[in-house]
Length: 332
Image 1 (cartoon, rainbow, N blue to C red):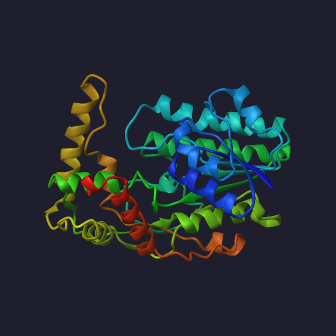
Image 2: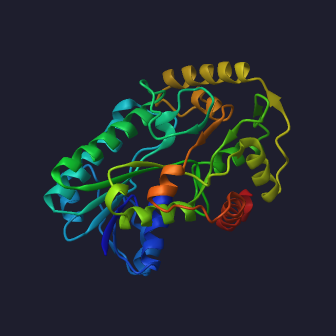
């Protein structure tokens, strides 16, 4: 099978492209940074550099491929709606259109469980529990992108969307690096009582889910799937496990949720008026994420995709910590 992986210079896209090559697939990759895909090219991937906002480029990318795994997009807790819309919705429109014009058989879309997040506690969220309003431009635009993908079914494109929660492993730059930086500066505190449970996903388990999505047939198609390790844990236990592995002090200070939320709101207001709108060190959404229960029901993926998490969270964290130490021993 010949596939295209977008966003291959990023963490999830890059890890899946490597996995796909190891499984014997013929892989074409796209990314903005050539240096980010050099390891894939060495392993046999075909690399076409370019911006997915260019519809002509995307059509060229989709030529002669059987399936597309679309991992590219804008992520984050801070930014303008227009930027998230451009990089999540309009880029996905380009990918969908290119798939249809080039007669690609299947599109596997990397979505996000952030679409469920409404600032409240939730345990065992199912795929149907999408709120009427979204807390953040990232969530709103990821949901809109999903709708673009599912809308292409009526034109014959086979589609699947995955919503993986807190993906980690070697290469993860989104979850723990910022927390490590804050703890080295003694600025990290437990928000609330520290007992809130969340889901994580080993990147190895996500790779298996993506591969299953490429091979799925029949009633498994045309659905969105929650993906996680299926073993919720208190988020601050995970944070402190990473701190121990990195030989940093444990996070032992507590700060009330109300105070944390208020400080984050002031931090956001200051950054919003500062020239260049720098990203705040603390955000209201970030405080909610670190304080609220947020877990997923993965029974649909288990049933339709035969998804069964095999790599534990702790193994994924060990992998991340070993990789992080190897990048630059001085920043441990």
